[in-house]
Amino acid sequence: MNDLPVSRRGFLKLTAVSATLAATPPWVARAATPDGGKPPVMQAVTLEVNGKPATLTLDTRTTLLDALREHMHLTGTKKGCDHGQCGACTVLLDGRRINSCLTLAVMHQGAKVTTIEGLGTPDKLHPLQAAFVKHDGYQCGYCTPGQICSAVGALDEIRRDVPSHVTADVSSKAAFSTLELRERMSGNICRCGAYSNIVEAVTEYAEGQA
Image 1 (cartoon, rainbow, N blue to C red):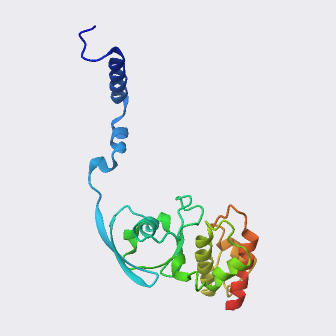
Image 2 (image 1 turned 120 degrees about the vertical axis):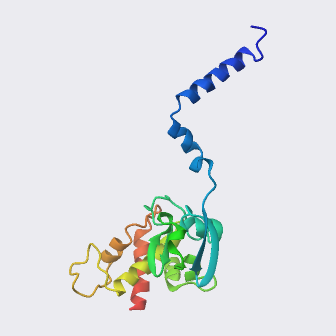
Image 3 (image 1 turned 45 degrees about the vertical axis):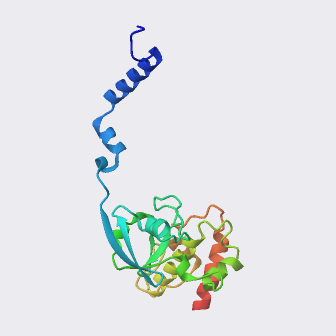
């Protein structure tokens, strides 16, 4: 045994590794290396973000959320659940609200994207942002960008007479109500539980726009 090139401990480790590799299904081994080691497919994507043109060269698997946060450094849009369940990543895409974590950037060539940075600035708040501050609708603030973008989109839906699941008469003109607001923003989760404050803030803004 003294003639072995490795120690007994080393021999046991090598045996264990060999046994593990032999028992690993091929599909698991392939999954460990994305695309089997192939380089990512890159593509140029042109967007209009907050009123300014932007051209990015992205891995075609890049979500719109990651394009905004990691490539354009617009970190106001938050990555929460990354599964489209919390609404923290909500932005406006061609005027319509969307969960940016659930869509690929390459799918929106030439689209107009508005993030929270495009609605207002610390020196010049959007009226809805000011209402959130007034009614303490932000609390920890993590979900607030998505809440505000979602509220802007929800109010636009009402103005365009787009019905929701709680609209009693889809043939009549849509009207703002607390029930409509809660339904339309039900996909935006606030762990601070500031829902009543958020409703007050959006209601004040909506009444001011009427």
